[in-house]
Length: 83
Image (cartoon, rainbow, N blue to C red; front, side):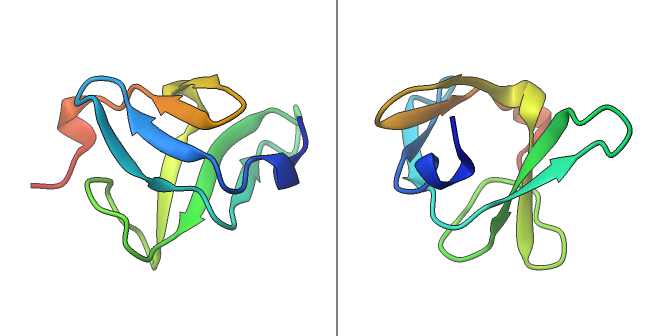
């Protein structure tokens, strides 16, 4: 799958069974030594519920459970959410 194919997919939290938004432009955090994707970096906008750092949301790759044709399923631990 290409990065350009991620755009427009709905983000769904499997634990809360709720739609978090639609993925727009993203960056990838990549381990330079192994080439492994570490996280999706999503610019902030109308995103809620994730910890924010410097105008962006970091979703660690380990929490992305499935990328389908229409949506991305995320299993984000409750203790990672902002209060």
